[in-house]
Image (cartoon, rainbow, N blue to C red):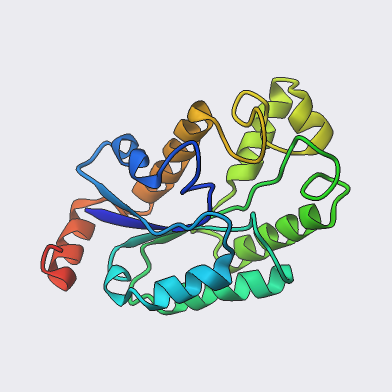
Length: 203
């Protein structure tokens, strides 16, 4: 069983590599990390195009932290990746916001509004495949009266203590939410394993 992750430093950064998420699925599962820190979906689209053999695996697309143009353009690059798949085994994870400042990716910053637009558009396009990880984390923070979630609409301090990246506990939460959605959609099932072996020869 294999999943490939595409994204930025939220996957491939200082705290956790996407390959460390594999144990949380509860099945024999290999994760390939196709993320590149600091890059947007346009850059990763080129990487995706250059590795067509990875399209047969289950996919996780996790962008939104580096929207260099418009939210619509960032969405279009994600859509371009999804449209190249010959299967429906993919998940789209919401972009995150920075709960340590009111500006830039904080609630009074232009980048914050781009992230929200990006997330809302992807949820509309892929309602059953979209994981609102930001919304889940913010709701937990609000329920626990965490000031980062209450004041800035961002992930709480116990999962996001210093900057936009999560700590180890935050990545465990992310891994569990992603794998739970994958399992519910059948992406980590025996049938999916059979499909992957059939199209990839077990590679």
